Structures are given as structure tokens and as C-alpha cells.
Image (tube, rainbow, N blue to C red):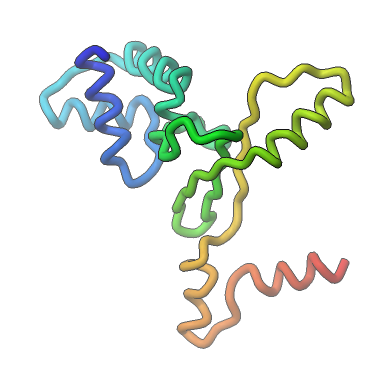
Length: 145
């Protein structure tokens, strides 16, 4: 692990939200370290290949892998209100998606997935204020269709 790679991984470890390569470049610049964005992109590609980081499909930003080599495809839940991200892995979903793809004549190599909605904190937040929670009315409407 080279020093620039360590620095990029440290930035992701300390980040509270997904970062773009330019976000990482700004953090490093504030620390007096200078890496051009092309180098940061290459480092991020390597970190993703080593399963040390993940690129979120919806935003193109990066997060540190929080599960290491846990079996199964790594997935994310993303709160549409506060932006909180949780990573999880599941062998069952991975196997089902691979089976589905194989039935179509496709040979899957990896799966990338994000689920959007409200985290438990944001879902409960309006209840505390005496309002109907955002999402519950929409959920009820979707379930009734």
C-alpha cells in the first residue's frame, strides 16, 4: 500500500458521507497533500477492485467498504432525506440475481445495488412532531394499488 493510497483510504474512513474524487482532493489539499484527480480516480478503482471501497451507482461517489470480505454481494440502503448509508451483504439475494441472469443467458460477475427510502430515524422523525411520517402515506397508497 503506497502512501497516496493510504491517504485516500484514510479520507474515506473519516468521511461521514460518500465522496467524489474531487471531494477527496479538497480534503487532502487542506491537509497539505496534493494528488491530482486522475491519480485519485486510479486509486479509487484499485480500492474498489480490492473490495476496500465501493462506488455508489446512483451518485458515482465512493465509500469505504464497511464489511470487508463478508460473503455475498455488498448492497446499500440510502436514506433520501438525511443521506445515511448502510452497507449489508446477502448470499441469498446474490444467488437469486445470478440465477435470474443465467436464465437469460447472461454470465454475471458481480452485482451492484442500492435501495432508496427513509432510514428509521427519518421515518420516525415526523411522528415525534405529531405529523404523519413521510413515506407512510405513500407506502399505504402503493400497497393498496
